[in-house]
Amino acid sequence: MLRKPVVLITGASGEIGHGLIRRLADAGNHPVVTLDLKPLEGELARLVQRQFAGSILDTNLLERILSEYEVDHVYHLAALLSTRSEFTPTTAHQVNVEGTMQLLEFAQKQGESHGRPVTFLYPSSIAAYGLPDLGAKARAGKVKEDDFNEPTTMYGCNKLYCEHLGRYYSRHYKQLAAETLSGKVDFRCIRFPGLISAVTVPSGGTSDYAPEMIHAAAQHKPYACFVRPDTRIPFMAMPDAVEALLALAAAPRERLTRTVYNIGAFNPSAEEVRQIVEAAFPGAEITTKVDVKRQGIVDSWPADVDDSAARADWGFSPRFDLDRAFQDYLIPTIRELYR
Ligand code: AKB
Image 1 (cartoon, protein in one colour):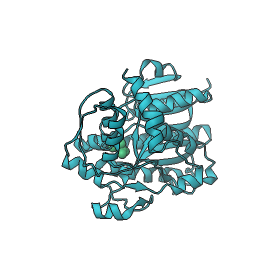
Image 2 (cartoon, protein in one colour):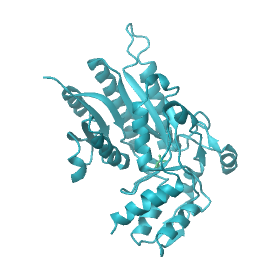
Image 3 (cartoon, rainbow, N blue to C red):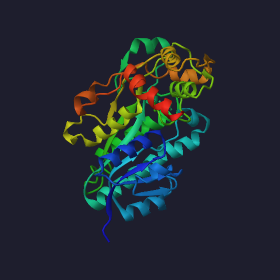
Image 4 (spheres, rainbow, N blue to C red):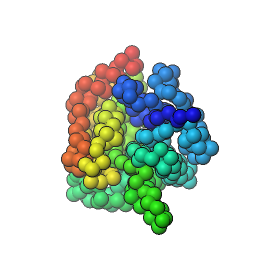
């Protein structure tokens, strides 16, 4: 029996998965198979060819997918985010590192069996950075991919290490074997800023204060922001994050000069976000109650990133700047969501 060619998305029911499934379904040329602990919501479920319910650590399940499908693209989105990982570092390591290793092995076997490289899209994060203090953060400005790679969180360490694992699988896998086995996994990675979606609320992240503020205001719920008003990190509207993954996946291999790319779109302070949200949702009750420990994590992340390599190599160009993200995407979509 012939195996069917598909795209595999892990962690498909998460924030990025939502947008990615819709976009791939619209494009119509990539049947999607998903793997997640949680089932997809009704409408999304209808857009995919098959859902596998289970863990990325379940090797039997991965073997089953391997035997039934010919996977050309993997979007490995499953992860425990930074705040949650800090409470359960061992589980974070299992899911974020061992899980990624399982998926890289899966992609390697897929590539060996169908003879084409499997394009492996990996979302890393600004959490891979660790700025030593606020002075260094202010002086650093737009941080380049290879600077300040000393993350302070378990999640950041997991992401940074998996970036290296991906490069290993792409270029050096089993380098002492008689035959060349590397090159079966075409690993491509984006370091995402904080992401803001109009249709889902994140859980377990530390950049969550911005999306939480917006979604709370739209539902007329009070919100206590857990970072200082002057806190600044890069953010991006979810549709741009999804487009970036697709653009990097589609880029000709020879154009790519790196395995890991920064991308950014806007970098408002928490106070600027509050002001925009209050203007959009009059009566919003937003206060500040600093959580010193979570604040420490956000302070270790850069205020901005240098994404010139992504722009030059694969044409990254976000549609939404701060104003457009709120006026054209977040505010109208969120108003509709909570009507
Ligand atoms: C988190 O806060 O953990 C994520 C991230 C910045 O990667 N949103």
